[in-house]
Length: 467
Image 1: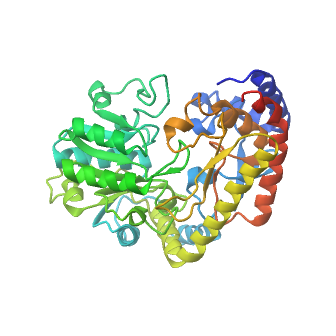
Image 2: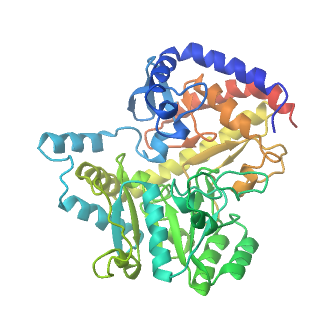
Image 3: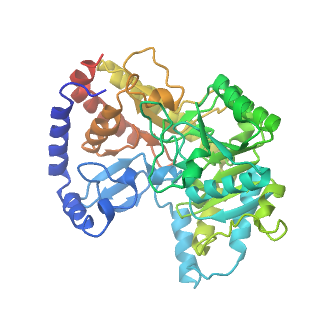
């Protein structure tokens, strides 16, 4: 829903933004001459142009202008300890100074150390490492299709599983809900083999399994949906997913590229009292370096190896198990294991405070705001917080279908107005806000609350006109 006078406010914000970040504008103009749209990831490329960063430490990034910007994006949610924690950067520096750390194309003990931690903390029997979440989810689906001999892949509408063929279906909300194909150039058969169901809807899940169960190779889902709102799966829904997958002979893949090590030092599966067949990991597992993994049952994983005849060519790549990446991942995961109680209790406390306070601040200005990222009947605490602007106070944002429906929520306000308005207050947010790290302090949150107060005052009249 486009609010009357939206464009006028948007133009004002962009004008102020250009005046505040001129050097970023100059750099972006140069960048567009050599890179598509001036960058490498669409989430980083927002109008009129992105803030360009020259350094990052803890809870803050510093832009080309020298502004210290409080960051809740934190490396696509990878930096649970904040930007460039000395724990990791110091070890990487020592490793490189000692003559090791760049690519060798050979094997070492570091990959074993990281894989051992992953198995220990997720209950997996085997692991294979790669370099991105997109590759991890693609390989997991290939393993499932080979293992079951089936062709259909079931996913959640609004769930993001990376830029790989089966993932590029049902991500964007349209007139028919989440049924769109996200990209040209995909194999026709691939897109026909992806089924989409609604998150946290048990009836819809039972219906799709009833209709297609004997053809479904796997159900891949994020236990906490990321890009569509940091919405956790209900206990009954995730347990039903396990039950139906077993009943129909399909594999259950938990895509924990975001959720893994975000809520506890391991998989969230124990919160749901289930064991997935496969798990995909990334982000936090890499300690700020490009690491991803597929982990799971040995009988499935080994079909990518010699024992299984290498039926699935999950062969990694040149930079799989890169030494510096393995070291960063190992240090990160070991730290989280050793400090699990203090890390996750601290993050949960900050998360509770942020979600409640931000909702209250906007409410004091007559704006209905709902945060997602709250814990639920399975997940006991959460460091995620994403703001939504529902059109009515009775709207509960329990699935991506509601969060992305323009008849329910004002997406333009969240994705365009709020983002620019917060950046003018030196706060960087994605999809409404983002994630907390252990580097965020009470003083940082005071900065956020003051910024939200000024933004709410600025947007109040415009947003209320939509009710």
